[in-house]
Length: 370
Image (tube, rainbow, N blue to C red; front, side, top):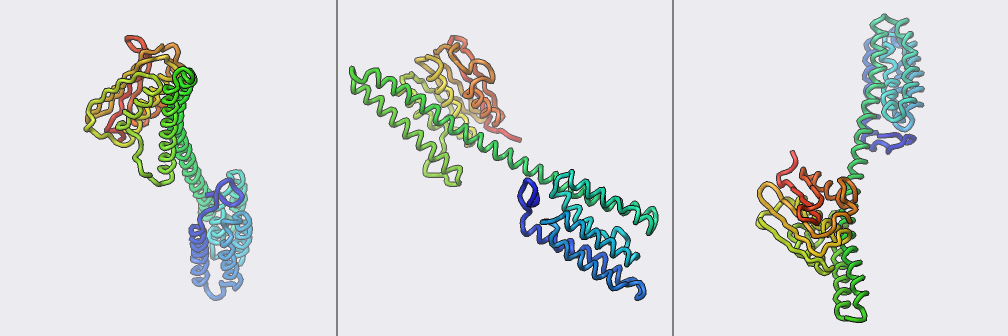
């Protein structure tokens, strides 16, 4: 997590409290036993007071890590000068904890400067001890900074995964809305055009077209309400769309003047809900593109279900050259269908049929995933 002056959110209050308590206990847990173990002549009164103040300063380590690091370094250096029996590493333990927090909460360019500042005190460890003391101090400071960097990388990775999940969910909802609206609007536009053509000559046919527009609009509104209820955690009164709704989908296309032949096999087999919805949306998108781009008068929809997969074939007698989605990867409709199939481990192929027209062929495995 990020601190108040960084780009992210602040750590949870419980985590901050635990960090404060653990840091204070660690500082005093090192300083106090060493102080008490020293002889009476080697226990200056001021050294213990500096340890207590250093532990208390860690209360603000999350809110002001740089300030706490500076104060802890000064207090630790003073404690070490008064009480050399406590190594420089132990005396500056509070500063090392603050460096770890600062490394996790602040940009690398900031924490790196403080790391160099702490390493600049290394000659004091050598002057007051030996090469081993110097090495242990350098290692302790470096490990404190590295631990903060590891925590920062962990939080960055979590934030990236969260952003990716949000983006994927938005894209999924956008696909659902696009599939619902695009199909319905295509039907409504065709029906409105037909109503206008026969409005004077055949009022009854015009009324039928208007009723079809109303029905398509109500159906779309119902699907959108269901989608919104599902996203908010309320499943609503109607289950999500699936292959069982293909007859209604075909009826809407027929109302738009398209002769739809629906052939289904294996209806007794119920695929997983994700496959069920994907199959419905693929057929819906294929019919939408036929209405919008093909100039077709007839389309055949075939759905075959078995224990292994759902196989979908949609073929029409339109003109492939009219399709805005004729080449692989072009056209939002084809790209959306390919993505739906791919997410389930399936395949989708689209192109001119052997007898003319256009075909969409999809295979959606029922046993998908690892």
